[in-house]
Image (cartoon, rainbow, N blue to C red):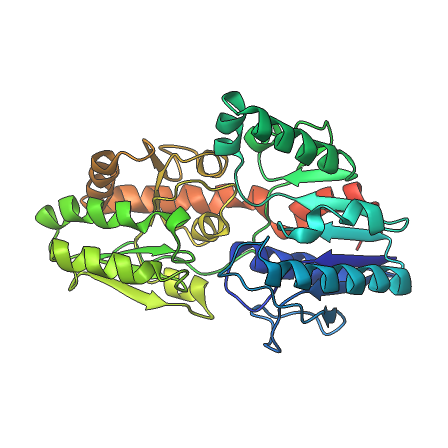
Amino acid sequence: MKVLINTDQIHMHGGIEKVMATKVNYWANLSDVEVFIVTTEQQNLPPRYTLDERVRLVDFGVNYDRSKSYFSFENLKKAWVHYKKQKQLFKDLQPDIIISPNFNFDHYWLPFIKQKSKLIKERHSSRFYEAKQREDASVLKKIRFKFNDWIEKKYNAIVVLNPDEASYVKTNNAVVIPNPVKISNLLADTSAKKVVAAGRISPVKNFADLIKAWGFVYQEFPDWQLDIYGEDYLRTQTKLEEQLEEAGLQNVIHFKGSTENMLEQMSQYSIYAMTSETECFPMVLLEALSIGLPIVSYDCPNGPRHIIDNGEDGILAKHKDVEALATELKTMMRNPDERQRIQKLAKDNYLRFTTSKVMKQWQTLLNLPNV
């Protein structure tokens, strides 16, 4: 059986890339299963996350210009090249299963060139705001939404990460499968006077609110520090650094860049903070739980509430309420015993998301052999 993952790249840090590596490595160890990852813009870079040597990599070298509109003349020409190469590859390989974990031009033509393959779409970003837009959409936007629904109905399944996201799938082919996390023997240092946040430095991660909240935290806890890990995206970090300078927080909040050993780095902190605009099922929260790192997160749509048991293994603050988040952070910071209590529960509760349990759900969906 041939399983093919269809994506843009696997050289960047990110939840999609990390989860993909976990899944393909699992499948590569199944008997009679061949695994392929097909990319459009790998740019001759190595995979960011370690892959089993049996996973075969193919890159089309399309290299869309992400600084321009998808519908720019340059990208439309690249899309035609993409289409031809992809169609030929499917004809040659005859994959049994095609999985598309992100949105690209080929979202629209995959159902028509899939040969006899089972076609799976994964949604890793929340459709919360799209659902709001549908309520008051103009006639043209309603037509666009209907067209997208027509395309998605042609997929065998739309895999979403939590039940809330399933309600946004209008085509009756939603399947809920959460992200998996590896078992870890690491344990967070709940005595450290350090808070950590991580993720691609982009607008959707909303680190600006975390910086605002730290302005309140700093008044009571000037000896604590906040470190933010992640790669810059669209020069968002420059704007955030300007915000730090204006707030006078440049000596207590630090951008640490990306790291190859995020879990080990996280174990040196006593609290994890998240202020995202939206999150489907953030890997970083699963990893925080796996090492018993207490979490304070916005209750953003819709992922954190499906990972965190509020008040038990973490805290959910009202979404986009900076002062509420700051209050919860300060409460956690002044209570080391509470951090230790939460740590013990987190180390137990994350086990429901282990790789072995989650991948059994994928086995059922794809009808793959057991390990």
